[in-house]
Length: 348
Image 1 (cartoon, one colour):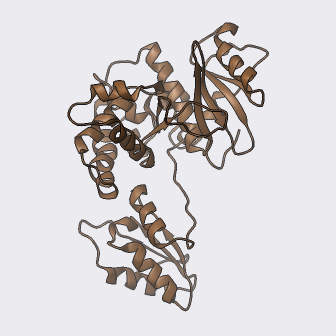
Image 2 (cartoon, helix red, strand yellow):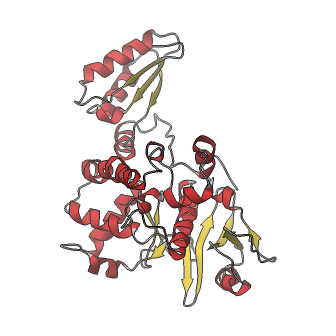
Image 3 (cartoon, helix red, strand yellow):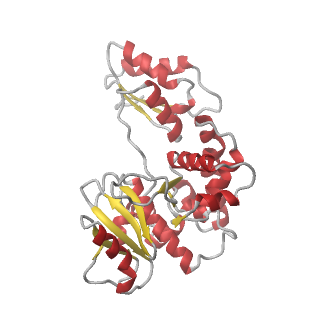
């Protein structure tokens, strides 16, 4: 208890009884600020039903702040029991601005390793860093949270879909070819559903070809975007090997796509024969851009894809995001630092 309400953590090795939650609620009612904050709330069985009951029965209302590391379990409780009673504040993956200010991380390091605060202290030992990301971050989601939240008939197949995705960042993937790489049972609808689950868990998002309506079309092959580049780097074999220039380009393109997704933009790609736009995005402030992502110097002809798209869709403007200083004068360049620092609160 302190001068700004009461705080408790539900992070115990065994589930807490509901009576503990009631006790915390009553303590907060006695505090003059009437603020109750509970961390790891998803570890309390039937927490959302009990919070709803206490809220509806209380004569005096509290300001209740509930946090948790399992976004899936948190959102299920909110949607099932607390509809109309909550404001959801998402804690996105760290962006470049945050990583730079807190960890003095360069753009190059951010693009290669992403930013997980708990793992950053091991960056001088990349094998230990990779173990931390795999065991402490990815495994709890794949091996626990997803299985609690969804009906997953083939957990091994779910892991294979995730492994294939992190090996193919920012690439257009035929689900039929992906199916051929899977061991064991795996129909196309099952693989599609597992990609959707990975998207809901903020691990992998499948983006689709832009259509004139701006709506998702499942008839196109998806481009896979990994939400934090740590997931890709931690599964490189051998992990200590430096990235090739081509792979660095994929990492950069993926980081760009991930930031747009996490910042709440609508994100697509576009491809028509030899012409391609890496991303087609619709922003919260009315931005409509066709984007080419470049990690090295380029020539004007390399931008023919976004020019072609904008000729078909004249309400869109072409944009280039490039790591180098090389620029084509007639097309606007978006600063790398601005894009990689995107969030729901920070706009371009």
